[in-house]
Image (tube, rainbow, N blue to C red; front, side, top):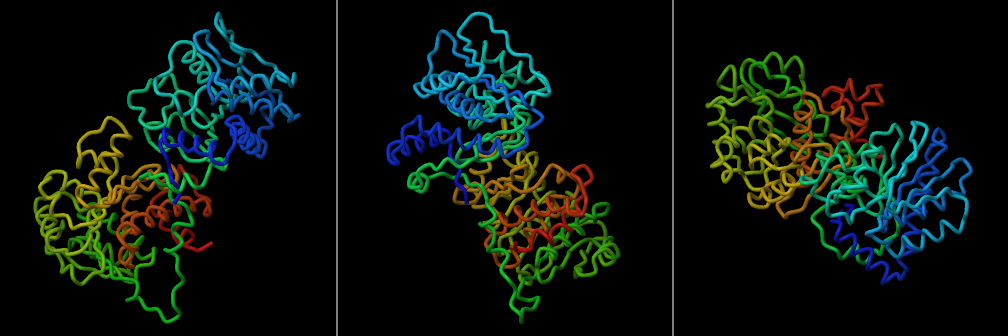
Length: 507
């Protein structure tokens, strides 16, 4: 797992690296600039010959000035630099050194804005802007001239690449920030670690894509610095793809029970069941109301069927001891008989459950049930469902930490769904998922995720592992849809199930 740190921790890691590598601060700036320029030149920016760099007075500005000097040697680009240095402030030591170095080259058009009227360059769609105004150390919203420059850049048709983080964006909580004073970046080259604010839905308008650039910070301090935040990497999920023994049989890969569907919502049961078997469970039994018998056995003959005593909805609980893992919720509705049956299941299950969709909504209507949820059960809410469980949040940052606290308090695994789905575990850790794409925001995608997690739980992975692996491969399956010529706009949940066969192949 790749560790993710707060901005204050990153500052301490930088400091430790400078003291113990040892390396001068200005040389660490140079290392970051070299990493940025190498990545920049590897990409295709040939349509933007003119590169306009906006630098601030701090160390993000130092990075920008160093980048300008290094880019000046690239014949395919004409570099212009605007150093914003208001009279009330002064340049950081590293920024001052890099200003002098840049001026010594004599090859870059350089303008220092230090008061008075500023007439910004005219920006066109043929230009590329590099944003180096402010980095992660910012702790208050931009205002005055800086805010005006940000608004000017955002209003331009130019592509914008931000250094480390979009200027104006805080490293963590932006709920009280001023939206208009934050750069809307087309690309972000961030140093050493993902920044937490890049992973939160509230900040989507400022973030199109980002990439972490390695700048070789000291490994000892990275190893010793404690953090609850992690980014899942492909190497972390390889345990889930162990080869099968030649003499394997279906009983070795678990018997899953899926309680899903009601009249008008039987598709949820079909999608979740198909995803479960496609993800490697040995057997699946689907418990659903009588109205679904023909539908399920026709649409998915590989599944076994357990019929509820009611024709239209879930009202009775099959013996949970028969099954390795149990999931409940997709399409079950909220009938009072269904709520009563869920309460019985919580009491009798004797093992961690997967609770999704309407199962979560029934819980939210009766918080007294929280204490009955079997320890280390997996809850898979989207943000609105989680708000019903834990109360409204001011933004994604607050919601994330409510989910973390909820998982710890109730000894649960919370899968908070979103672009970078966050799996919160009972020990207080948060695992962000990097796979998936916006096309997966489609009906039935959550039902498929329930089925994938159910498969891993049935195969005797821990609830924490089942959640992390399920989320990762669900997202990867959505990404694989391009293999079939499916774009994000036309992606449907069934395509994600198709993608599982490629996502679960060990590369």
